[in-house]
Image 1: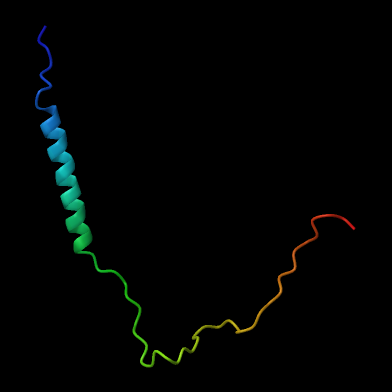
Image 2 (image 1 turned 120 degrees about the horizontal axis):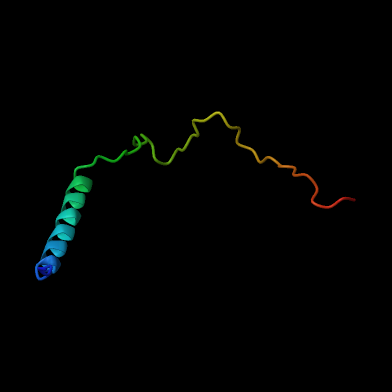
Length: 66
């Protein structure tokens, strides 16, 4: 019964991992990430949302009976 030759396994596994790492890096390098539009006047910040700018109080149920 022949024995399994494992002398090249280290080289094969190392090369495979290096190749996968390089492919991943190249894929990430080519990705375009979202950048929010730049404000015209950076000193003036106006919120453009539907929430009112005030503090609200959140009332939670009592944890213990009175």
